[in-house]
Amino acid sequence: MRAKVPVNRSTVKLTHYGRKTGKPYRVTIWFVVIDGKVWIGSMKRQRNWVKNVHASGRAELEFGSGPIPVTCRWADARDIERTGEAIRRKYYILAPILMRFVRGEPCAFETDLEPV
Image 1 (tube, rainbow, N blue to C red):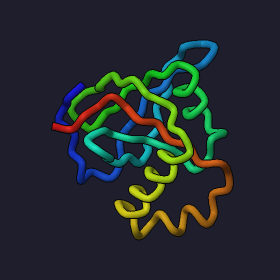
Image 2 (cartoon, rainbow, N blue to C red; image 1 turned 120 degrees about the horizontal axis):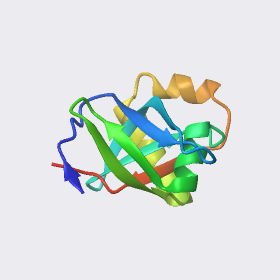
Image 3 (cartoon, rainbow, N blue to C red; image 1 turned 60 degrees about the vertical axis):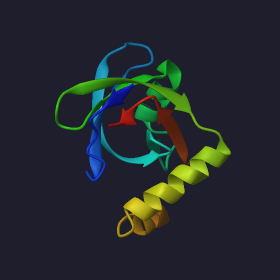
């Protein structure tokens, strides 16, 4: 799916849905564009939004012009590393600090969203 994505923006609002209830929840996260697709991820696989998106494979991304439904694919180890590298490049000031303090297992999702 193609949509206008302000790639220079630092965050995106992610709406995810409860695994049991289906209730919508909203968080603000970082994102990157890799090979023409929007990728999202976390340094802690244990976060609820990660578990919910992994369970359903769906979410909505909000860049400021309305929610965009996306399908999310759980990334393999190689893609997690690529996403981590892209995050370190885009957020070069904050990423090293946060990565030092956040303990957990990283994860990433490739969305079907392609910036125009």
